Image 1 (spheres, helix red, strand yellow):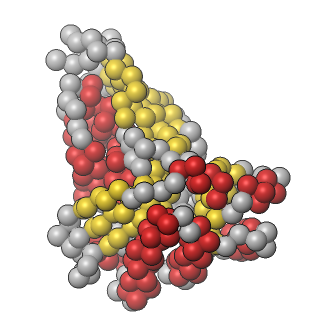
Image 2 (image 1 turned 180 degrees about the horizontal axis):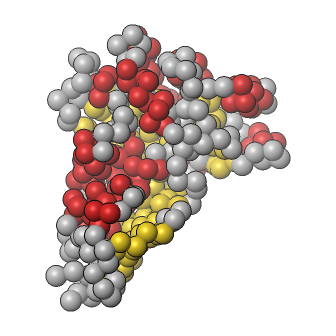
Length: 328
C-alpha cells in the first residue's frame, strides 16, 4: 500500500558552534575519545514533497527537472539513493524547496535534504522512521554509498533538531545529548552573515581528512572547544561563546588551503571591528555563512552591505508537516 496523494517533510539545516571536523571518520575512528560537536538546528528549512504520479515514471524537480522511466537514470544521486533505500522507486513526483541556497553555504543543507527525502519517502510508503534511523540512513547514503568525504554531524542535527552535543565514538556509535539554551537570547546575541560565496565542501573536506593525522593536535583542541562552548551556552555567557568561536576559527582557517581567502578575511575583520567578541565560518569553509556573536545594533550595521540572519532554533528536527492520510 502506498499513499495516494501528497507528503511534505520539513527539515532544518544546522549551525555548528564548535567541534566541526572531529565528526570526520578519519579523526574519530582513530581517537580514544572520538569526536565531539556542539551544534543546533537552525529555523531555516528544506521541504520535500512526494506526490503520486499517474504513470510509472519518476519526476524530480529541484534546480532542474528530471523525468525518467527508471529511477536508476536519475542524475540527482541523493534522490536516487533515497528512493532505492526506501523502496519507493516508481510512479512518484518529488520536489525540493529550500529556504536558503541549498549547496555550498556551510549549513549542512545536502545532509538536511537527504534526511528530508528519507522521511518523506518512508512516510509515503506507510512507515514512521525515528530521528536516529533517518540520520543513520542519511550517513549510509552520503558516506558509505556515495563515498562523499564528509562528517556525520549534519545528518544528526537535521534529524533530531534542537541544540545538542553530539559524540562520535570510534566504533561508529553516535550519542546525541540535548543541551539547554535560552532561545530568546539567541536572536539578540548571535547572527549569520552571508558571504555571497558558495563552494564545493567535499573538496575541502577531502583535504582535511587526508591531513587529519598531521593536524591531530588542532583537532583535539577543536574537540575541547565543543565541551567548553556547551558550558558557555548553557550559562548564557555569550562573550565566552564568541571568544570560543574566534579561537575555533583561528585554528580552522589553518587546517588546509581553501578554507579562507582575502575576501573572507576582510569580511571577518570588518565585523570584528564593530565590537563583536568573535565568529567563525560555518561548514567546511571557502564561503557560505559566518556565525558571529554580537548585538542587534551590530546586525543592523552589517545589513547595509550583507544579508544577515538572526539565530533562531528549530526544535522539531525533520518533521512531516502534511500527510493527506489516504491510501490505495
